Image (cartoon, rainbow, N blue to C red; front, side, top):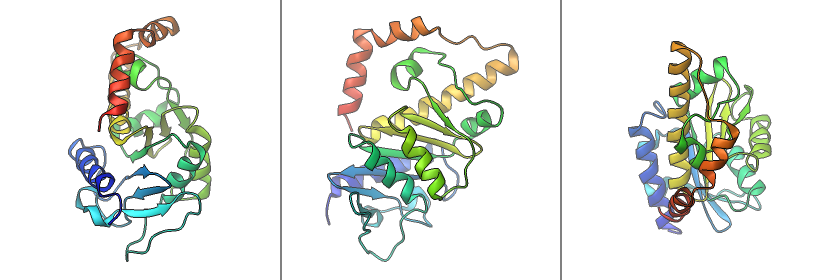
Length: 219
């Protein structure tokens, strides 16, 4: 079986996503790139149920699916179009975090409020609600992947990308924590985000640059 290491990494982060409460039941889908192939979660499985051999292999240039008796996730086009649009992207994580969904019900722009958010995520893009599994959603996400590494989907969830699964997964965690902090702060008063200059100052820190580079390289 090809690219077993990639398949095992997918299993690892699929379990982490479930353990972190970022999806419920069979919700969400994730993928990772290996050369000209992407490996995507199959349809009808909860993420923690997926064994290495069940990840669906899709040829990125042609969209051809390797037949193993399982169907790819219904969001296959969102992942496929994303890899085509951003060749350096190594992974895409689509989850349904509760605080992110709640945030999209009342807001669009998630402000940058703390250093990890500034360093690991930066600005978060937003797409108003579109019917899941459609070309409309797939195209909308593809249009945003070069604009932001994290995309909030109105009334739906979150898409994060990264050079590897580790980076995409941590961005998912940070965005969900950011949405939670914002909602808590707004319930208590008026949130005070970091200024543009403060965000730039964090990005300029050598320690943050080193940490981000390390995160991109590690699995």
